[in-house]
Image (cartoon, rainbow, N blue to C red; front, side, top):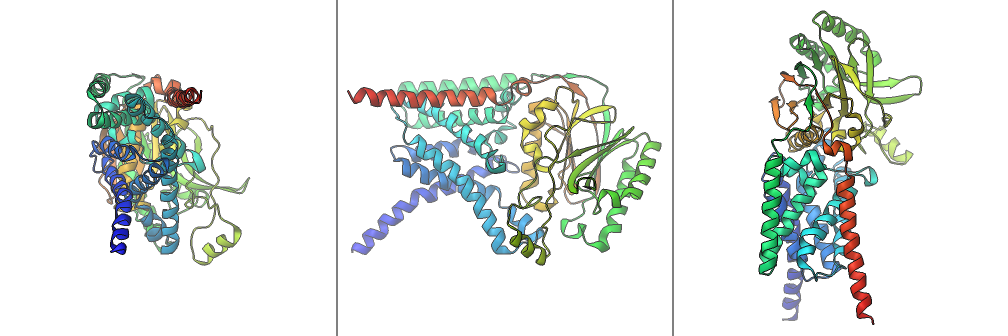
Length: 508
């Protein structure tokens, strides 16, 4: 009989963590390609409901399992890139994935433990101010700490909702805060007293109504005639790309597609398009450039370049117009482009025929690429997830360009999530963005974050569209994340001071 009782108690203790894990996994459906955006605030509100009347330890546990569920479901595609295409052993792939999930869960666990120490005496302020501010600070910290992983921030789920109207003002973390405020309002509607419910409903109406009013506004202005662009998508599978007997085929594919694209003012290749280093491909590139100039086309080419002067390997983007310019990727992918491991691990990787050579990051401030008569702010691969790092260049940039190789993720949700991130960058900056990828999803995005043209996946294609050069700065581009982060810190500072004062007054 005693064993049955103990078993039931254990089952009860497991129910809440399992529910939190399920809620996190469910919240991943708020993001592309599913776009069930309502799950972003509702799942978070349910987690906060589970936190009610519990200890700091319980909140930490539930927070950990919530984020673990979110990233297990939302980034399952890492298995494809690490094991299936990266050829790492299954055990290593699972270990790296578990490490990421554990790290993401730890951020939420620390948050739950800290919030458990705050008094819930002012329930409306706790739900509408303290919880959203703490959650957004956690999102921001996980976006830069230990190289950062800013994926699946709440704000991305609202790209096609009225809250997107706030993005040019407060950026993705500001939209995250408004989503979290909506979660707090939902929590109050369920658990609060009459006056709290009125405050919650009023908050929802004001926030979402204001977003709808802001959405049509433009914060930048046209600075030139439309520009014809062509994005070249070779659709070379990652497991075939670097095999020596496929090199000639890849060169022929990109030559043929580029011939189709010529005539557009600007032709863009994706990240590391060729299975050759730049210096090995120079005769081929000279032929492409000569034909492009004859058709009055400039080129943007994603290439890997070895710098013989300093002995460094770079993931680069070369602009070929009147002269040659380069942009080097700054944000490198851990365990993809650099390997923070001791030498004996590198030796083991080499014996396993795995990538083991580090790329070198480009400098923080490289300037713009001048091509097609425009000034372009460039990013490579997942650099566009670090939007604030691009803002310093916007004063003089008229267009954005991102080249990527989402072939590493196969037919998964990752390319759709990445496109969603790129769309929000265009909206924050008030600029058109050209996004060229190896196998899709290539796209041209306007200054409202809307997709103007989009490629199919896994097929060779030339995607044509017109882009409009724009100038001026959005409020977010001017102020960056400081208003949102400063507001969150101020709110939490006020909450902790108020708690300290209450405790001090009770001690007398």
